[in-house]
Length: 233
Image (cartoon, rainbow, N blue to C red; front, side, top):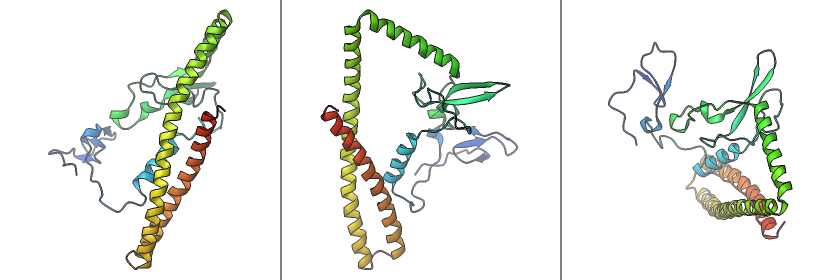
């Protein structure tokens, strides 16, 4: 358990602070200065299930605005400094002016916050992409064989790295599924013998079932990806 610092700000929630109750704006503090009290109550779900959900949510595709308009480069652009995703912000100052901004620029955690917004006009970004494509086209026409070799080498290296990660994740998922089978049998027996109250059995059973469903879907997708790679598909 973290120790409470000797001098806390007058108003604090431990992730942000105010020098006085009169202040209207929070100042976020470094994660190393947070005061954390772990395991103060029984968790609703298992930590691994929570981590899986956060990972899945991190890959969810989101529309850039309430209009549902999707810019052609949405989900494809990342910050050169922190690697975070760039999201489309639309500024309506008399005309539609979409701009990409680093998503980590607005993070409340100073340790993970990007140093700058890296705002760039979506139209300018499209122009840069077009110029790059023209350069690639010229290179491909000037030396087609060299271009093909370079593309094949790049794709092969990328696929090799991705398939290694997918195989590792597949093994982890299968191992966890086996653990869930054991855990479910144990709580079933404990409940039948009166060692585990019905309420706790129901909560644990639902948690295990939800995690099992999510893992089974993921295992199916990973197996298809691995089989296609190994089969040359």
